[in-house]
Amino acid sequence: MKLLIPDAILPSVQDINLDDLRRRGIAGLLIDIDNTLVPWGNPQMDQALVQWIKRAKARGFQICLVSNALPDRTASFAQLLDIPAVGQAMKPLPRAFRRGMELLNLPPGQVAVVGDQLFTDVFGAKRLGLYAILVNPLSTGEFGFTKIMRRLERRTLRRLVRRGLLELESIRSRLGRD
Image: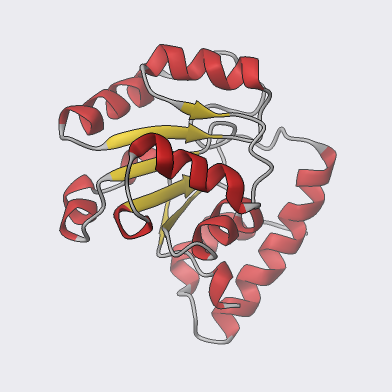
């Protein structure tokens, strides 16, 4: 269960406190795309998120996209943001996270993963010793399999709360109905 406990749970990417990450020794971010930076399937990124990425880069953070999306989609957002990317990541398998760290030239202790899914983003990060930030998904649109996994995710989060491993307030907005 420890591998499913995020280090931080936030409403959105824009709520990430870069000063706090810097104090923790984090210098690089591996960020998911779908339902983390853009609603699932959406070809456009909100300008506020584009500006957030630019501010993070200006503050010295290295950023790489790590997404299960197809390479063309991943490359399109990487080009928009002028950052490297790993597409068809097959998260939570470690290969793509390791490739992202290689592209940033950073060790695990200096890297945070930002994503909207417990079983891909958080689990993948934690099994490699990376700092894991779970954000709320931007939309309810997603693959059918992911919708099924969301139900399992909510049950797992409730179990973590019952065991005292997470605060209910930190996940309340994710719980919804099953």
